[in-house]
Image (cartoon, rainbow, N blue to C red; front, top):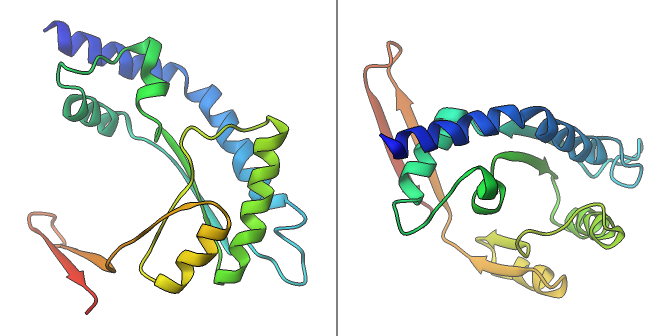
Length: 167
C-alpha cells in the first residue's frame, strides 16, 4: 500500500509540474519551428516536428517496471531518474542536413540555454553514415533495420504484432 501511495504521489507531482514542462517543450519546439537557419523559405532543413508528454498511466507503468526496490524514486528525483517525460521529434529528409541541425543544437548547449543529460547517440542501419556521426563526435550504434507492424481489429479485441527485419 505504501508503494502504491508513493507512486500516486509521484504521478500527482508530475501532473502538477505539467505547466512548467509544457513551457520548456514549447520553447524547444519553437526553436526548431522558427530558427532562420533551419527554416529558410527557399530550402528548409526541418521537414516536420512532433512533440508529446508521457501519459501519466504510462509513467506509472514505467515506475513499477524500472524501480523495483533496488532503485528508489520519488518526487525529489523524478526528473533525474526518468528523462523521457516530454519529447520533441525533429524530422529532416536528407542525410547531409543533420550537421546543420546538430550545429544549432550545440550552440544552444554552449550558450547554457540547454544541457545534455546524456551524450547524443545515433542509431543507424547504414555503415556509411557512421563516419558522419563519428566526425561530429556522436556515439554511433549500427543496428539491423527492424520494423514493427501492429494490426488491431476494428473492435480492438485482437492485436497482432509482427517484427520484421530487412535482409
